[in-house]
Length: 292
View 1 (cartoon, helix red, strand yellow):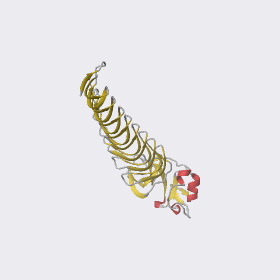
View 2 (cartoon, rainbow, N blue to C red; view 1 turned 90 degrees about the vertical axis):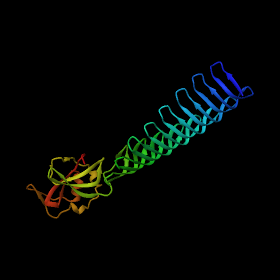
View 3 (cartoon, one colour; view 1 turned 180 degrees about the vertical axis):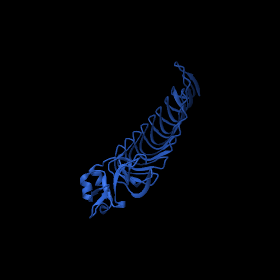
View 4 (spheres, helix red, strand yellow; view 1 turned 30 degrees about the vertical axis):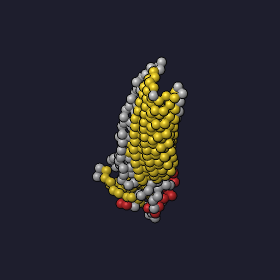
């Protein structure tokens, strides 16, 4: 055992061999930090505890003066990482808890979330389980939100991208191919009819049917207060999975002294938002209502 002071102000107290730190010993750095643990030929090797002057503390395995193996790093802001290390970086499996309560449990590559892992967003109540790349949701995964919504499918650069299904808390679903968080088509699952009131005017809402993130509403009158009409592109109309006979009539339907005779083919060819519906002999308007 020796006690040795170095010209730079460091001080070593421990085992000494071949004029180098070898065995167990404590090195107190001139800046106030210190390392206590195993040494091999003047380098930290084996198990040890390093305390930095800024308050960080690492307890775990060392190799050739670097954090390497299993270890725990406690950060100055209260965050903590427990897991595998390689060359002073988080590599392998580990759990990182941030001071705001967020937590990631999964695979790491060179200090980045990479591979399979689970992230719990404590401040928002959201949770993601799936694949990661460069700290972003990337690949296949499932994200659940605090409001009950749930998306399962492909991700790219933290956005819904590729095949996937978004299930809303009310049970409606958006299913299809996504591009940068937007659904590419108008179809969704579990389409159910329901009645909704707009200023004492009936409106037929098709729950679960979506276009570009907004639900469809069928209004019983062409201009109902609260209804914002919008023509639909022909490619969207062709995707609507309704009984075509619903639009086909042998006789004209009349509304406001005007009569119409439209079939499903007429609807598709027209590519607009107006349809003849037999219910009440009233002409309906298909529209988007963002407040639903």
